[in-house]
Length: 473
Ligand code: MLT
Ligand code: ZN
Image (cartoon, rainbow, N blue to C red):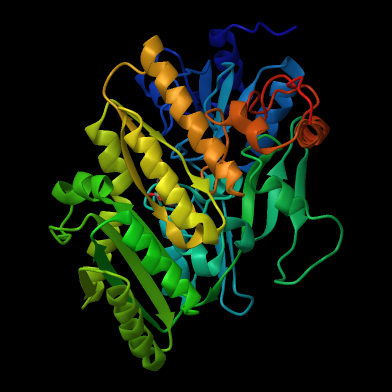
């Protein structure tokens, strides 16, 4: 039996991969691997190993299985749910150095990339070749494509274009024990066998470690138009969104933010939001330039009819960029302004959006916890943030947080929604899974996990609650 002490694990990895690949407990950098962008942790690993190839990833997984050491895969660490945190210690397996864009093929409309490539870079490389990679998580400047696939990340453009899963055609995956598998395909169509790609995407690194992705690209849309509409309250904004959807308008993004979210971001951004805005909708359309102008005017008018107090159309690509920079800064601004930010990402059917927003309003009014709500209204996907300035572990505070989050999830499920629209379950939400999924569904998922990882060494303790709950269905 290999010595399970952290120093000894790190030492063995160093012997195999070299000193520059292993971050030890004595190294200050190890603290970076103990946290993500969420509020869980810190959970320091024994060490982190910085892999540079599929062979190295496989070798780490072979060793981890042999020595029964937990191993937690990590992309850029931009997750919100503790999914990449080594809660049982052991090895963090980082793919951050696997940064090669192997292929951008205009004929086949595919990109082949390593998992550590930053998502914004995938978009830039596709655009430089006249193509378009639509998934656009707000963290696209620093999140990695492997992490996006592991969590099946979404983003504003999911409203028209779908989420990461819709763009992953094929994967190379390293499994526990060291086997490397190629699943999926390079063709846009393909129904041969079970959908293994669909299983690995969104499994949050609990089935295997993604070492290469074949991504579907689209032709670049010829023109884009972006509008910002200000409203006197969230209810009116929700009404406008419902009216737009009823009108058959299909923007590529349909975002909403409440007053608290907007106010938190004002000082950080070049974009000047209308001063009286109690809620905003950010609407982006794309398509042929001729039709786009008319649709854009129609969208603005519909919003005015529905009660907008200000409608602005971005006049240049730089104005459009600063508007999106401001939108993407909401989450970091909330995090910066408060000791703790608990960010949920519930998702309800579109028709239930106004009712969900009303219930969130009631929930916020009934608690002394400060809140901010924003998100992808077109998808019914809302980021409800609890902003806490006391110690969140203090029992009374912890209790109030737990009650508020539980109520939020209960209301979501009651309206036909789901706990997570885009961030995943990770650690933060695994103990709420039973609110949405039956014991049987959880048991089948446990079996699925056991098939890939019978000894539970790969990202243990994530997604599924640790023990089956004994309760009637
Ligand atoms: C966003 O839409 O800004 C991201 O999903 C981040 C967040 O929810 O905080
Ligand atoms: Zn989001």
